[in-house]
Image (cartoon, rainbow, N blue to C red; front, side):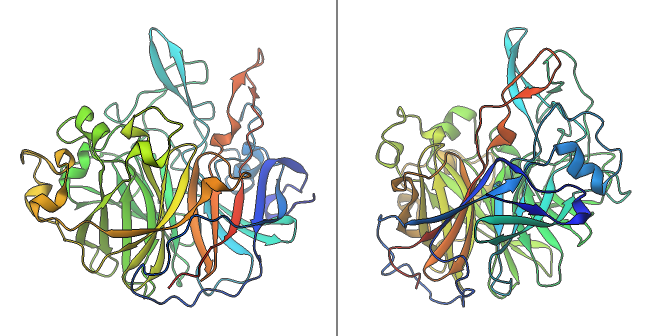
Length: 452
């Protein structure tokens, strides 16, 4: 199938291993969001596959250099990927149009010196915000925005310091410099005014970005200090978030229908008081952030399903459970993407009756037992988010692994996207990537029952 890019990206279409699968109607009307609860949304039946479209064959260097000339000298043969780290669509967007965001760029782990080392084959890569148009079997990239600092230099995806991760080159031998501006981007929101919000995993933090792709401000947990960043930093988030597990910071983000509140989801339970506790916990935190006052106004507890029931193919390892995506399903309801790498399910979660734990003892790292240690939150008078199953995406045979993005198209249709990690594989003698053929896909899924 054919895929197109606009002239501003300087590269034209050809097929490459990034595909878009469609279920239901790609031209369905935009969602008129309403409803207040999860009643009538329980089912696990899949949708039906209707069409498949493919992204253009764009090299990482060609795409970024078209907007930031000369910023990448060698992309080691890597192609555009990771586009499914999140997916955004507002009710006012034209039919078939979406916003997507890549993560921090090509990276992996290589065994060297007796340890797994985090490698960055293209250290100059900066996370990208993409506007795409799906038209039948074609995907057109309408615009691409590399995320940059106030100076205009790309923020890159490198860690800020050694507390987060130690970065190495592609061969895991040369340690790379830290970048205080670096972002491990995941969630994405675009406001009616045209600016963006994203969340990232390093600090973890919430990031405000203007319409040109420049970071306006980065909101980090209290007590986090990042010197030398190419943008303002505000310690506005609860300090307890500093205990996030490695590579498990903020993953989900969405905006309330009235545009006043952002909802931010930590990917996994905090390592509070230690990683062992976090790995066993089923209690993960979702925050509410007021856009106007730039303050956190609420903090809720979302409870994972037991791993043995959710994904029987995985050995009993609760740390495999992840919260990867959010979408606004009503004034007080969220569509939540809960997953392992192989199984993904969408739940409708209700906010209005959940306990707001913000500023309570559960935000104090000295509290024992910690929230993450609590086996039954109700015993501690914590009402978790009430949730009901909307659809089990793993029942769709074409569903890829690592589904991370979700957007609502209309009451009966949702779009989901996966992260193919740039199809990073091994490197040949010339230092170029030899991928595994993993595709990035976006699927439109017709729900068994309409959202309320």
